[in-house]
Image (tube, rainbow, N blue to C red; front, side):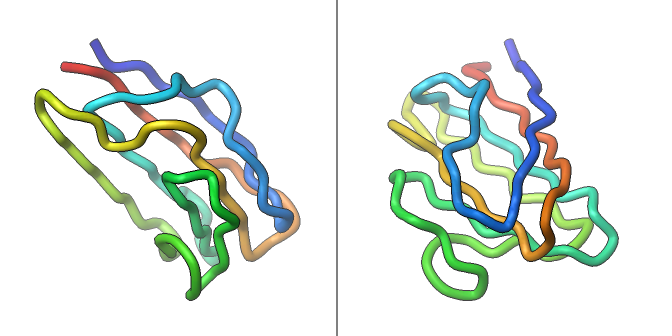
Length: 93
């Protein structure tokens, strides 16, 4: 079963709330037309175009690890703008 959260990401790195500690499927969508986001799966501090994964404006990152886990612990994210929405879908299909 897949679940969704619409999270707010700011220009100060923080843990994304509303997610479980792990899942085998994860999709992160950046609906902003110009802003980029960066995120990490290990709780370390993300840096745009540096530490972690940087997702361009209007980009989507999908990760599927059947029978395993995409992440374990906290997902931390940061935006290139003061505040923006990010859609995250996760689950264990």
